[in-house]
Amino acid sequence: MLSKFTTAALAATLSLAASAAMAGAGDYTFEPLNPEMKKGDDITLAIRLTNKRTGKPVSDAVVFKTRVDMAPDGMAEMESAVTPLPSKEPGVYAFKTDLPMAGRYQVTLSAKVQGEPDTVTGKVIVKATK
Ligand SMILES: [Cu+2]
Image (cartoon, rainbow, N blue to C red):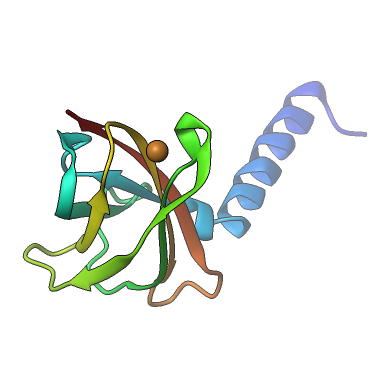
């Protein structure tokens, strides 16, 4: 029979093992370099992808899908075209888009990260001002 202490230690070990096994697509976070900018056309959005476990930027990702829309302000149908731009900083992915009106925009990203079998997805909110 297991003592209370052993049971607790065993449970802790099991939960550690479980979280290690679940390491994956959820370990990454996308953040905007500038969460607020002036509205307009040909705006550069720069988004940093970070590995939350290591705290390091992920420089070898391939962002294969990007969507910019105004879902946060109830205008999900108001979508802007997005063009990838060359990265100027490791782990920072840049895009050109239009932010035609003041308000909040949602950037939805899907990326492939080296060594990560699952697609890494994230949502970023940026605000355009008048
Ligand atoms: Cu709008």
